[in-house]
Image (tube, rainbow, N blue to C red; front, side, top):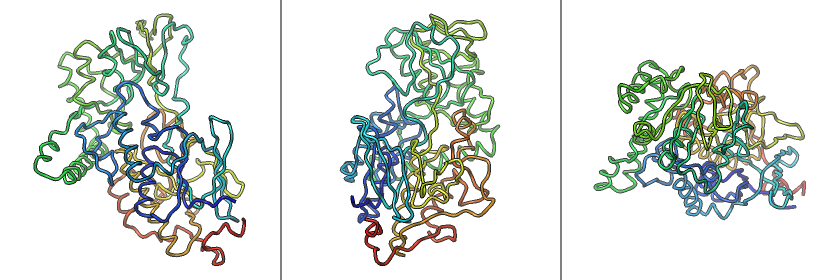
Length: 497
């Protein structure tokens, strides 16, 4: 039988590459592999190719803690992030451990063998392959790569123009001189509109309801100035600490003083667009951080609107027509291209079916332990970043915790670890219920649940997570360890083989 890996990682995106780099640094004796469905490194940043694709967090805090980001563009574009992740994989030798083109479909834990058997489909040949591993780490993000969310628009079949979802952007699409309608008001829409407005005849952002949008500097002038006097690593560390503090302050202030932060955000829009602009197009019905805030570099969206290259319409769609979209107000928006930036479809563990000793493990019937391990599922970790802060801040903490756990298991000669919860701990709320976004509400029957108390609650709190995952003892009375069989300590699968 094939020798099992010590660790098998699913996904070679930002989280998977980060997890592998942590293993390389902290657990160099571990034999691991990465299974990646796509033919390239990058995950989300390889999938999305629409105009203007960029991060919605500053790169000093969105980048890995262990590999500084030295460019001074605050919100980096997709190609730059893809290069950063790929170069990180190459620098740490992680790229040599990736097997591309494999869609993971099933993972089965055997208590008898103390091992995971993972089934993956080679989507080119149609053949299936099996891999065995003592520990499994899912780094698949939280949405479906096959298709984004698309509402059932009336009359959509009548439209004679081109309709596109950003998740399936056509290569080399020519929109020069075209009339474009972008349906949506989230991070994708506010990125697309100014990017396309530079060449399109006109771009209209059609929204059912507004989002909070605020401007951030496009270029970090302070770090540029500090770079004249300080070593690059000091500049990076300073910028990272500064930006984390500012982001956390904004989030906590929004939760404590929502009216104050709401007023500040709306004044920022007014300052950009002038006193005569109808501010209702940027005045949401909800409070800040009930949904994610949208950041735009140097107010590029507002500048496109002021220049007359873009506009915002707040209305509901009555029906598509041959020439565009008719709204409930009776107005018709003519369009050559309609971009449906209508959101994501959430998916847990990349759609992998999970079994323990032949029993299916429904994710929505489980809680997460410290936001990393899955309740009652042996030797399984899930790298899930923040939704209210840069994703990678939590992904880095979680990856470090997994390495701490693996080293602790080696030290106490343990083959298996399981997180057991007390009775009555589970609540009827999901790990993403802090957000009221549509994509979160639609996935309520898919997502793992929250517990009453830590460690069964996802905290969305960087300072507390940092202590919990990097400093608190591994042994806490919740984790249950099974010792390795002394006769097969070197390879607990030897007897089964």
